[in-house]
Amino acid sequence: METQCTLKVRTYECDSYKHVNNANYLNYLEFARYEFLKDVGFDYEKAVTLGYGVYIAKIEIEYKKPAFTDDTLVIKSRPVKKGAVSGTIEQNIWRGEDLLIRAKVTWAFVNSKGAPVKIPAEWDVPGLSPEKE
Image (tube, rainbow, N blue to C red):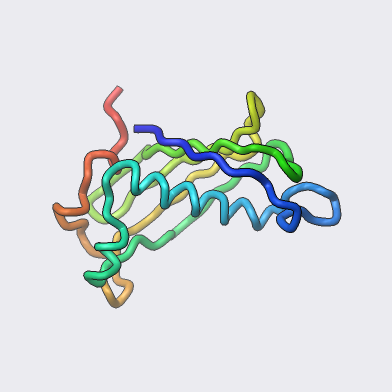
């Protein structure tokens, strides 16, 4: 399942080169992952309340083109891998037809001590798994 969300670049997210500072893309991707979890039916707030979490283990980002102030960006997120404890989400940031960012984000489900644990059935929703081709 692919989900998408939209945001607009704010002036303070840009650097002296007048484009979005590379570190701000991490915030964009995080916002989109939270929206992705809601869209696939993962109750993140309840999981946290019960002592669980979804930690990021690795992020790979390819910067293709810059974004600028007032650009409207569309972030598309989809699962590409899932195991019993962790998975990988592919996230692409678009401005119109232009692919700006390609990212792969590896996550792990953790307990209250931050240790990886098997995803309980309540949070092992189908949308976390890649679609069969």
